[in-house]
Amino acid sequence: MCAIRCWSYVCIGVLGVLLAGLPVPEARAATQDLLVTASGSISGSGTILRYDGITGASLGVFTPPISGGGGGGAMAWGPDGNLYVSIGSPASVLRINEQTGQVMGTFASGGGLARPLSMRFGPDGNLYVASYDNNKVVRYNGKTGALMGDFILPGSGGLDHPAGIVFGPGNNVYVGSLYNDRVLRYNATTGTFIDMFILPASSPDGPAVIGLGPEGDLYVAGFYSNNVLRYNATTGAKIDVFVPPGTLSYPNCNAIWGPDDHFYVVSYGGNCIRRYNETTGASMGVFASGMNGPWDMVWTPEPGALALLGVGFLGLAARRRRR
Figure 1 (cartoon, helix red, strand yellow):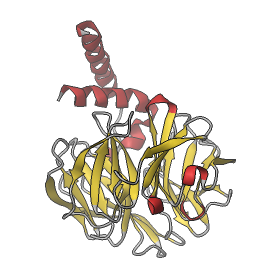
Figure 2 (cartoon, helix red, strand yellow):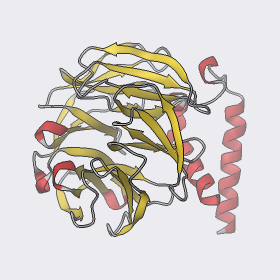
Figure 3 (cartoon, rainbow, N blue to C red):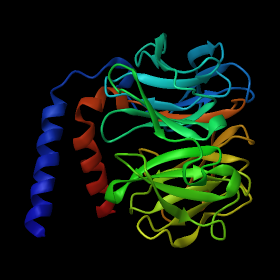
């Protein structure tokens, strides 16, 4: 075990030396900033705002209002280094230049997509978009945007308004079923329904799956119960209420761990981003505010590191395990 750990340190150290010799774009020279989609309402125009990654202070608009942005607002960094954002009308996914914030055009559309409120690039590099209004998940080619068809069929396993897509251990994918208070599990290759992973009796009200935490547990937000619960990602057993009610207002599936390792949650009803202690879940207050109807967030400078994304995640995981 010691030999393996030491070798991992050497690999990460060598990577750091190699990266040190690479030119750093000026926009990324200081710190990672936070990008936030803000729709104003579920049917309004979408805007991407930028916030200082250390102080949370507003840095202005990254992408100006996008016509038809309402009913979408999910974001993800693509394997090509650009930013992808969903819009509601026409339901589609746009590609955004990672340097300038300018819209480069429509990347993916079709397949009966309706209100794409959450999406994720999968382990296979393809794009998976939850179609909220018709209870399915659509898959697109991650390089070309070509429609690959329904990944999870409408209503499969009782899926009722999907909220959040998380690829987990054992070739599983988890999807929150917001309207019937359950988290469903599917085969991550075929999209075939496996089981009801989290039952209504132990689910928060309006479950929206967030992701796997640094310790490997599954985090689920209660959109209507205004909390975040933690579960065993293998058994589905409830571990605890990580963030209790009281500080959040309509938290959704879009929560992330920051460069400081703390836990950041979009408080849609509170028009802010809140920060919580990564270990205890204790509130650390409002991190960023001044947005109207925030829906999703991502950190920069991930695009500049996407060529080394797999190695970077391994290094981050090793750092977190050492804490």
